[in-house]
Image (tube, rainbow, N blue to C red; front, side, top):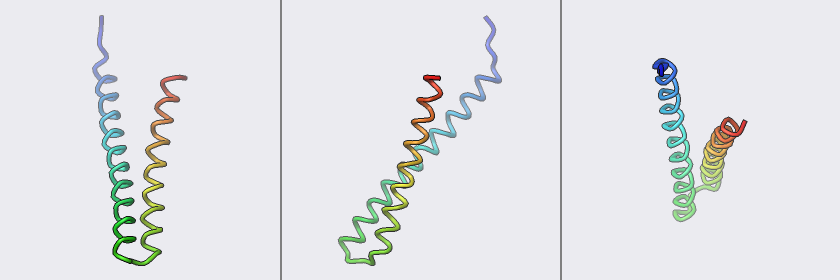
Amino acid sequence: MKIDWAALATVFGVSLVVTVALVGFFSLGVVGLAKRAGAALSGGSGSSAVLARTGAYACFALCAAAVAYGIHLIVA
């Protein structure tokens, strides 16, 4: 049995980068929702709350798209 160490390292590297990116985007989404809630409680401007909510939803959409693509790769 021969192990292709270069391919193993490539898979490890890509997995590490994608995992860090997904956690980062999800964290940004949570922070965006928290800022929206904070702006609503403090009586801040409506445009900043809308911008925070839109950014949070965009981050969550990127996470969902990455998960769906991963499932597609596994199934296909």
